[in-house]
Image (cartoon, rainbow, N blue to C red):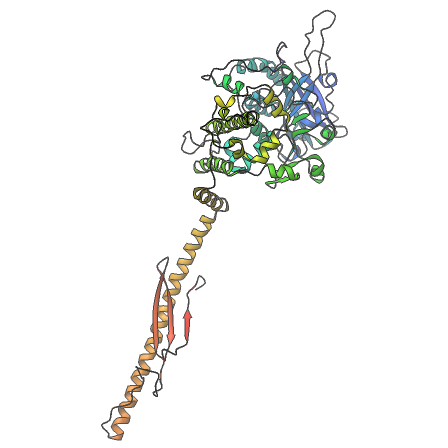
Length: 590
């Protein structure tokens, strides 16, 4: 956003080419005075490296987002030039490449088989980028399709249309862009809240990933969760800038029916990028000196170069590796502060559940129910409510500490210290930050009279919390799917095994009956030969393990029902009760 009293910045376009000998360089400027070179006037030697990101050659099309410092200007002697203070500008580049053999006019400096160029748009606010990205992609694709890079008419007309397009969008509501919040929560789950609260502590946050566009999108999505911040990034390109605080005034009125008035009165946006801070969605290696500078106390930056991982402890307090889906916190105090409290975890679990229950793989940005719950607006308002409750609770703590000797000053409906529900260590760390200092200085001490000082999900750990987390972990590991498959396979094998055992047992029982019949015949023949009337000896003593001996086994059967309509068959050999038992268990491998 342009600062008060300064004219709006007219968007400009440039083309960056990758020269095989000199590397990335600006080839031409569009929308500037003839003979003018904004790169040299504003000291942008790193612009070509920001526009052509490391690894861009691996993709057909890639986007890079970056910040630039615009130097202050003064009126000239004729008064024709308008003065403006130093401020931040924002760049978006679309990089493409094509086979050099396909060029209609091949310049002599093109000696390699591939031509790589980036079309760059520079403007004064990133909230235009949502619609601008789509137009930039279409224009760049059309320009490459001409196969003649000397014809710049399509780029010239594109630049001329930008000023009118941005003017038409100026009064519209915030145009959010970046990775959708649904995708952010679906990918990071409860870590989304960890990253959000981490940003508020203003540490050195480093995002790493091989895909430049996704790398930048996640950072913009994260800072967009602070209402109004996207439109107030005028100080983010240089740690020496502090114009936001210099021009800030404490609100003297409040219209609770107007959202903008309420947010402003509550001290939003929290300014993460003031003096000593930096925001660089894509930061090339050539800019590392600025990150290591003594005056740079905090930043949120992104890199696609893996060399930075080797020095992660030097350049980051927290490293978010998007390629490996890991978050590494090197600072012990930061790790302790970012441990979520029970109400915090309950709150983000509810959000995660709302997203997962409405997730549509074919269209991740919208709930499959097409309803409000789990939508982008739903998530954004939940974070807004969380942030307002946080600000109110911390203000109430400060008020209580100031009036600790006056019991009448306390609110009877508020129990204990509601700020502790946001994490005692985190609240203590936040009160040491620059954004808290500005918030506390320019807001009323009784904010808790406007918004209730209470965590949205206050309370201790309950059984519902445990059950929800277990269900979430099972869902994350896809255990329910694996168990279902296992149950089906086990049931199938048990049924097959049961048939095998039943067949074997029937054959065994038939053999036993044959043995019995043979014994009866033998006994009958012996009795007839002896001519006696005495009864033949019983082949089995059925009342004890007494003097009679078994001439064949005696079997005892027990069927135990188990799931999937299968059965475990227990078979024991006689004489009982001194029988030795053996168990035939028909398992999954039948």
